[in-house]
Amino acid sequence: MSVILGIDIGGSGIKGAPVDTQTGQLTAERWRIPTPAGARPDDVRAVVAELVQHFGHGGPVGVTFPGIVQHGKTLSAANVDDAWIGLDADALFTGATGRDVYLVNDADAAGIAEAQFGAARDVPGVVLVLTFGTGIGSALMHGGVLVPNTELGHLYLKGDKHAESWASDRARERDDLNWKGWAKRVSTYLGHLERLFSPELFVIGGGVSKRAEKWQPHVQTERTKVVPAALQNDSGIVGAAMMAAGRQHPES
Image 1 (cartoon, rainbow, N blue to C red):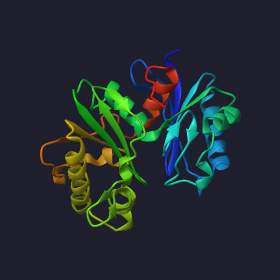
Image 2 (cartoon, rainbow, N blue to C red):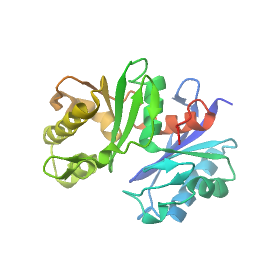
Image 3 (cartoon, helix red, strand yellow):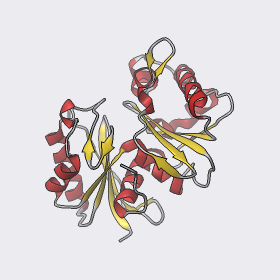
Image 4 (tube, helix red, strand yellow):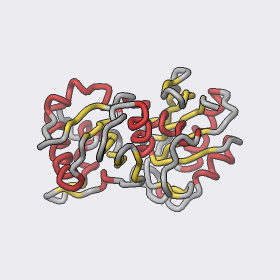
């Protein structure tokens, strides 16, 4: 089976679409439902079940989660309810949908998709795929292979600035920054990551990838090329479907 339903749980919206995992293309228009206030497990479970029903999907389902995922359990909850910590979310969604559900960190899913079909395809060495939205997600890739659950959005920068609280897209909106002002913060963050990982490429995903012309000219790095995600905000959906199809298996 090459067409698999992918669902991407985000801080502001939960979206899904069937994906041809051989090509990375969505086979139907994606459907988005706002993330329930508080993002409690039972409320999110209901939305995931609604998306499965909406598409009438009968096969396995890939689902992303904005936090650490190991062995189907969610181990952190930076932008969702604390009840997710230690929860067997794989079993939660499998029970709610009646489908085989496979869970993966949201940025890791984006990294898998970009490495296979997008901006990180055939790039040697280290690539960092970073998703800017409610928080900052990260996927560390080496030669197209994922190092899972890096959670680099939670690094602290000089001056004790928590990266995602200071440089996420939500921070841009909260602080009423223009794109140039936000790009200056992103540049500081990317510079920190350059010193730590010396990547060949930064791939910038999340909702901001759709507006790359606004920020890309203002992002400055010492040596690393910066590009928007080729799959834009669909990369999480595509990566989740790929994971469920068994084309890529993050290490636990």
